Image 1 (spheres, rainbow, N blue to C red):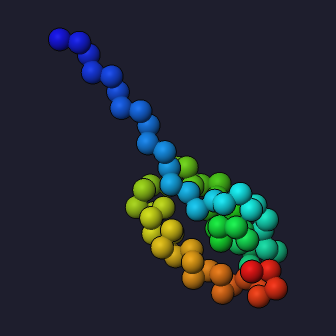
Image 2 (image 1 turned 90 degrees about the horizontal axis):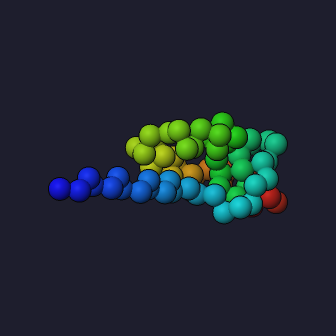
Length: 69
């Protein structure tokens, strides 16, 4: 019986929209609303933590000055 081929790795869902500019006041990316630390850690985070952050991100827009939204 032939060996099974391993399944290809799953892609990691990301909120990145390629607008990579960080607001100095809030410390959030203006494209995805993550912090630099969250962006750096994203690929190493567990799926559950990433899902939790994905749910939280839309509410972070309030932390960014209205002129930058």
